[in-house]
Amino acid sequence: MDAFTLSQFLFLLKGLQWTVALSLIGLSLGAVAGLLIALARTSGFKTFKRITGGYIMLFQGTPLLMQLFVTYYGLALIGLKLDPWASVAIGFTLHASAFLGEIWRGSIEAIPRGQTEAANALGVNYLTRMRKIILPQALRISLPATIGFLVQLIKGTSLAAIVGFNELARSGSIVSNQNFKPLLVYAVVAILYFSMCWPLSLYGSRLERRLATGAR
Amino acid sequence: MDYKFDFNPVINGFPDLLMGCAGTLGLAFAGLLLSSVIGAVGVALRGSHIAPVRWTVIAFVELIRNTPFLVQIYFVFFALPLVGIRLDPTPTAIIALGVNGGAYAIEILRGGVQAIDKGQIEAGHALGLSKLQVFRLIVFKPALRAVFPSLASQFILLTLTTSIASAISAYELTSVAQRIESDSFRSFEVYGTVTFLYLAISTALLMGMSAIAQRMFSYPVK
View 1 (spheres, each protein chain N blue to C red):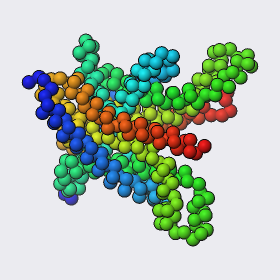
View 2 (view 1 turned 180 degrees about the vertical axis):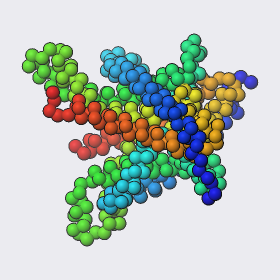
View 3 (view 1 turned 120 degrees about the vertical axis):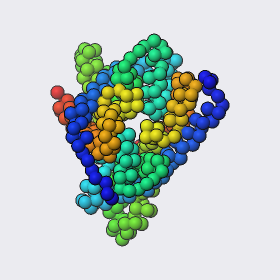
View 4 (view 1 turned 30 degrees about the vertical axis):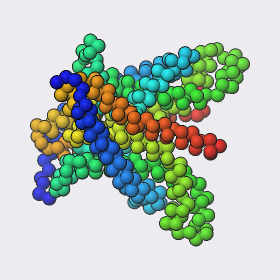
């Protein structure tokens, strides 16, 4: 057995499915939590600001691999008996929430203060101001950075392999242990990651250029 | 919750963990050195007049930036022996880190070079500055000032990335932690402590970087 067979390639594609699923879960749940964090950071309440600031520092200042290990073993410790994939998904959600929270805090703060003041003067309440005035603009500004983070997240899901989760990178290790063609297998794995990440990166930088010209 | 914390394995293994921190910093600085070289050469080639040279650099940068480091390090790990280079895991990890960091460095440095105003270079020549003075005062220092924050945060990311080198069992903090964990089964205690060690490392580096930025790149220009 030392050829790269079709069934092995299909096995890689199955791993790819999990990579996509993990990325999407991390992105969507992380987006919800990240939005709350961004709102708490910009709320003006000192306690909120401090807690979320510490949370973001913790996640930005430690390796993703450690975050996955700690959530994986920490959840088991507090008595939650979860599937490995559920605890990995929670790990990525926490990770994404911190990074997206920080990106969106920046874009919320980038909206001129005058707009908030004008909204207040007109008697627009907080929810309406955020929903109708601030967030739509902030989202537009944040899009390149958000897409950039999505690329990081997709690449980051490869670390689930080290925790033992069967996604694309680990499928690659398994296949290369079968056919003893590590270079070929990892090249195919790299191409699969590349074909997900590169279009996103291109789209992100195109948006960034368009925003930059729009602002001029 | 009837779990009893037991930090004894962590306390007994603490000297090893500190050595692991030194290993992590060693990997990070060696990786930084190599990626600076790759970055400088790459950005020079990126501006080449020969199109295929430019394309090669662009392809390299895009390929590295859009694939996971784990796959890159495995690739290097298996590719080096095939071309006849037999290295220990730690030097292998340094090469992978350098290649990865180099691609990001090319991208960041390119932004710095683009930021320089051509008119200033001409003004420098008109004022009678030597070529070297123009390069040092008008090109190099302002460019470095412009990109230093990005380079610094990229360096901290590189430091955190070294934890992935444990996948090929290079000597650094995560692999030391994995050894203590597999001896003691105190996973949460070990990884929790190590997480804070990483936080300490990245915070210290961050403070060091902003001290450098303040000393070397603050206005007025000396």
